[in-house]
Image 1 (cartoon, rainbow, N blue to C red):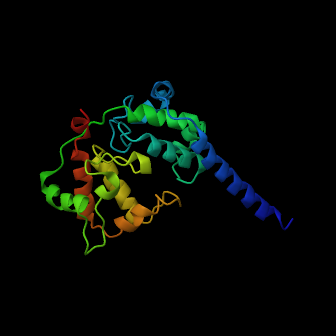
Image 2 (tube, one colour):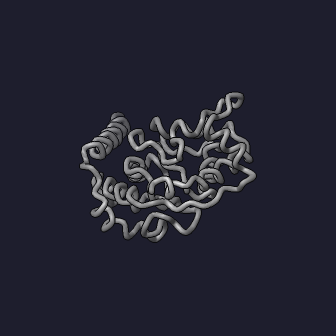
Image 3 (cartoon, rainbow, N blue to C red):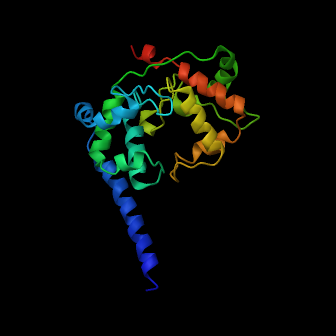
Length: 215
């Protein structure tokens, strides 16, 4: 009886490792297969990944590795999201890669940034703020905001300003996206940003024109 809790924890840990390994062993994503699997995603994220409602993030142009990683974390519970968990629960690792490949193949729409936000946001995005201990956003998200697929850092360009602002505010309030190495980065940075810094960066991200850059 004494050993049951320990055994249960070991089983959970083993299951988590097996899931991580299965994601790594899945084949490359197939965009055509992903399109067929994406119908259920369209209700919130739109058929082409350019969601019409700012509370739902745009997936169009997001890199395959990042989408697959987040879906795996929703499924495992490592990233807690009541809306996404039941959808992710039905997906295999190959499904996740296929969905990632499909949305990565779509061009994201973008909007204009608030002109009043550009100067400060551009400083933070391109150079950071040494006094605040804030690194340049482009170090991980790229100079054009398209992210770094090989390192699973997400695309920001064209993302809804309201969504980016909400996530930065949550991270500043210690809302966690799990305990892996990527999830630990943003809360520490967000804590050093003011409300205005967050609003300015969110607007700036929305105005980065990846659709034009991709042509």
